[in-house]
Length: 449
Image 1 (cartoon, rainbow, N blue to C red):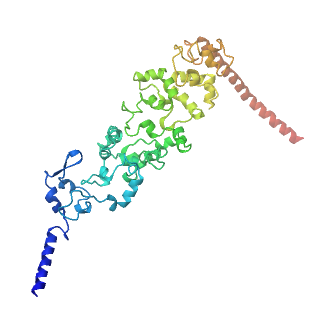
Image 2 (image 1 turned 45 degrees about the vertical axis):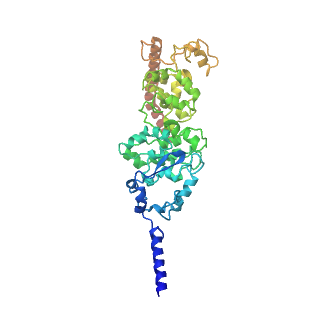
Image 3 (image 1 turned 90 degrees about the vertical axis):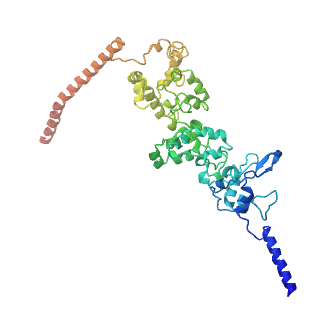
C-alpha cells in the first residue's frame, strides 16, 4: 500500500510540474500579454536593428480577428516559446480567398507579389469592406496620389457614392492585370466597367452623373473597340485619364477645353499639328472658351466617321453656330442649296476653308488666300482659273449696299418669277370655267346623238 501511494504521489507531482510548464494547458492571450504587453520588450533583428515585440492589444481588439487566440495564428505549443516562432498560413482558414489571390495580379510574380499582410495588415486585420485607397497606396503611392486629386475622390468628401480601387479593378482577391482579357480594366472591358455607374439609371438620377457611356458604344471609337476588336481605339481612360479623372471645368483635366487637342493628339498627331496652327487654336490659347476645338466638331461620345453624310451635314450646321451670317449666305448659294436637299457631293465649309487648319484669308497659308484659291477650287473644278475664283461664295443679295449688282439681279429675278407665276396663275383660273363648260357641252351633244 505504501509503495503504491508513493508512486501515485510522484505521478501527481509529475502532472503538476507538466501543467506548470504549459503542457496540457491552453495558452491564453493573457499568457502572451504577460510578456508582449511590455513596451520595452525588444529583440535584435536583421542588420542588428532593434525590433519591438510589444503587442498593441487596443489595435487588435478592433480587428476582425479579435475573437481569435494568438496560438491560432502563431504555432506555439509551450511557454516560454522558442525564439523563432512560425506563423500559420492564412490559407489554413481562408482557402478560397487564397486560391483567388494566387491567380490574381497580386499573387503572381515574385518581386511585386503582395501578401495578405500587406493589404489586410498584421494584428490590425481589416475586413475587406473597410479597405480604402490608402491601403493600396502603400505600394501604389503615385496612383493613389493621382486618385486623390480626381473627381471620384473629391466627391467622396461630399458623401456621394464614389468609385474606389476595387470598383474599377475588381474585388481584392480577384484583381487581374490590365493585359488579362478578363480584367475589368482591360481596354475591351473598360466601357462596361465605367457603365456600371455612368449607364445606371438609378445612380445617374440620384447623383447627377454624366450619362453618355451608352452613346460611346455607337461612336466610331466604340464600334472599333467592341465590334472591330481594335485595341488602339480610344476607350474611356484615353480621354478622361485613369486615376486622375477630373471634370471638364478643371484646368488640369485632359478634357478641359484648352487641353482637348493635346488629348486627341495622342492618337491623331497630324490633325493636332494642323489644328495648332489654325485661327481656332489661337483663340483657344487666348482663353476664348467659345472657340471650337476637337470636341465641338466631333461630339466626344458620339463621334461619327467623317465620311458619313449625317456628319458632313451636321458639321455645316456646327460651323454656323458661330458663323451665323456666312452659314445663311452659304445656303443661298448653289453649293448650299444642294446640301439643303441632303446631298454632300458639293463644296462644304471644310472643302474651301480647311478642316483642322482653318486660317483667315489674309494668311498666305490659308486655302482661300490669293495664293491658294485656284488650287482649292480646282479640287472640284479642274479647269478653274483666276477668273473662275472671282465667284462670290458668301453674299447677301438682299442688301443693296453689300453688292448692288447682286441686289438688282435678285430684285429682277424675283419680280420676273412673280410675274410669270402670276400671269399663268390668272390664265389658269380664267381658263378653267371655259374648259369645264366646253367639256360638259360635248357630253350633252353625244347624249343627243
